[in-house]
Image (cartoon, rainbow over all chains, first blue to last red; front, side, top):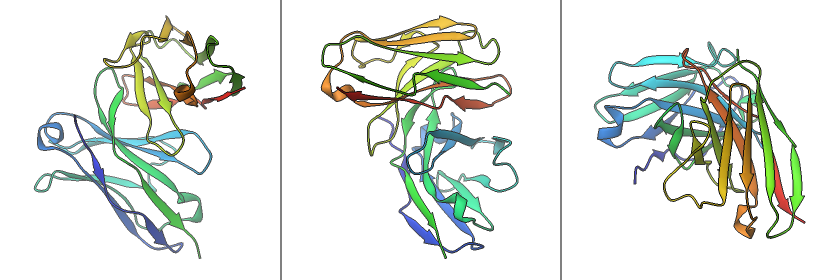
Length: 118
Length: 108
């Protein structure tokens, strides 16, 4: 079973920066796209973007582009989702997930709760 | 961009009931449609890929059909553990993924 391990919950203030992580097994890191999905409290799933770690090819949902950055560290098999200036509206659970077949996400991380509050 | 709608947004059903959820795309997506189950407090779980293919290990009471713009997801006989929110999700050649708004299924 493929396991994606995400970093722990974060509490930040508006305007602060943040980087959350998703550790990916090496064979998955080198062969599959890894995506991020946002879920605000009590709401549905929103696709944030994806990265292909071998060459860091990255695509974003236009609704998130410019506000978040997705990156990969090939030395640690880790994928990141980062913000340079958080807003209260970024408060949500963020999941990483591995692409599987036909644009589907079969393997998911456990989620990282990000709380942005003054 | 492809927009996805689902109906109903919520439903109540009894154990053993047949449950049907529909998903509609704003343009032809062929069979690029997946279905997920999200139980409360858990990460989503992929149930169906390519519109109608059951993921190995997923119970056969789950079924889905459709192509183009109209898709249907069915639970043939509702079990208590099926209480969850169900999402459709499409994927296009431009690497854009879109989830439907979800259908919450609870027990009557």
